[in-house]
Length: 291
Image (tube, rainbow, N blue to C red):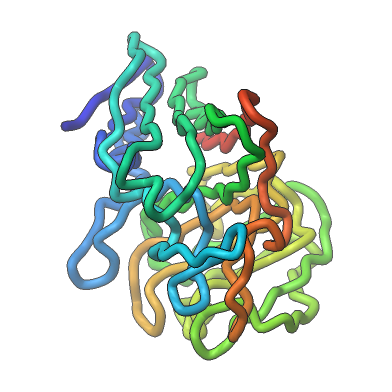
């Protein structure tokens, strides 16, 4: 089922399966900005990543000496969320632990995603609640896809501009798309600009650490922009379908990373893993502004 909120600037539609965005439509520009999915390139649109980000080595992790299976990006993206709150400008979706999730993730939780409109901005708030009596460990991230081009022209006419000068580090992937443990300096023009080219993604996602936490997708000489802000998320994935001419780009703020190549990791030892005390709550935002 699909649900919509709207104001004078934007109309936003979200599906209860995965609580993923279906549409971000600008009324001012009469333009659809969100990737609509494609059998040819990528069927997804805007996954919400929980309780892991990316791939795990051998599709498993350990906790308290026991192995647990987990698919890429966790189970939230394939879970049916419940709409638990809605008005004209806000809607909140939730999924809770159950007998099936406990088989692969031994923690009692509620995972909520709130979508709210503030003029031409969509605020996505992730809310993780530990409902159990033990410390909870979790991964969290976003995976929204945006149509490129969205202001005429072609893909190569567009670029990403970070809101401040930065010197990001590119974290390199191994042959199985897991973290290799290697990194390199990632060059930006004027320490701010990344030109979009299809071959940028021939080796899968560009994963950055220490980038600025706000960016805009722009077209050379264009007027429309998409701004994405992710104040609490230290890693950034930029991706489209490997070795293709896919007409979209995903801007993926992450709080944690995929597993290391060749290493069955304990969830408690993953880099920057989320840690929640019993009966406590954590929130993080991603803000998308259409200008």
